Length: 179
Image (cartoon, rainbow, N blue to C red; front, side):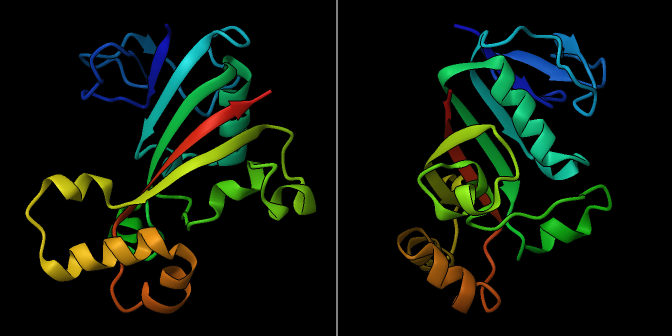
């Protein structure tokens, strides 16, 4: 099983091949993710993790197309990004992209956005979307916990009606490669 941690930096996940543009400890493959093709064959990857990376890249659609190319059918792709309402989305001067609940709907053939707009031929099924997944391990207040529950159960209602009042911080998407 071949698993990639794209943009891993110094915090590569155990059991993954670490890919980053910087040759720092933990990086197995030094490669700039803005340069395509990636140094992997078509369909050779079983799992990809990108943790707080996609928001830094100039062409996120092209990045997802390249991930689609290197992954086998049915591969799992986990993408963690700052939620567009979070202050953390905007304080980092290197962030170029912002993400809401339906960002990956444009790649999912079960969603009308995919066929209506056709921005890409790459296809991913959105299997799960989680707000503030990393905060669940921390001590958070009852209001934060309540907002996470509401956002999980009613993501569009939360995004359209409540997120400006109590913004959550991150979104984690679990995608399945469709070929």
